[in-house]
Image (cartoon, rainbow, N blue to C red; front, side):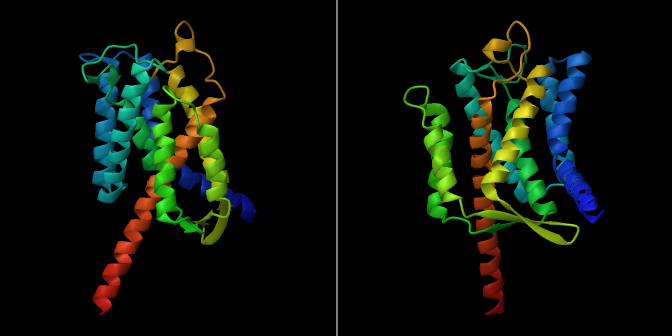
Length: 263
């Protein structure tokens, strides 16, 4: 019974951490079924995302530091979206006033929602990193994974080499989290795979409701290719590495301040 209660607690904390993504999916579904007046659908989605972001900050569900991280992810995602749409990887076929090079601005919030989940889960589950690799290894690895999303269109795709490198670098690393007063540990590579898989499921839901469109979905919706799990896995790794690195910097700053005060 205790194991079941702990699982329910864990699921509840995860659900609360997914509040921003849930609002995005609900908005996609509602705007697909109900045609809202005055503005195109993509613009309504942008307004909903902005209002949601404002409410989360105002209500205290997100801190100002977390908002900075989420904004960074919005910009990173938007740059990637502009490039991928230009290369024909996917498209946003509907009209919209707030578009940048055929990419609706709400799309950046889909990446920001991943960062929101990570920040929320980190705080709610009191996450701690165990045997985290040095900063000088983590940052170049995250940069290499991100830039491979661009470079593979013109050069070789090294995603599998990068995936192997992730296994080597993080083989001994794990994440510790707290549920109901008890602490648990999970290999960090396994957590990457889990989050990547669930984002792939979310991607299928998003494309079903017309968030964006792959070339093979032009005539009729079809399941997103399972190979996309590898792309989302690498994107999750980039997201996690950025959030973790920023958390580590914040901890070091807080430690330095406390030491200075004690002196």
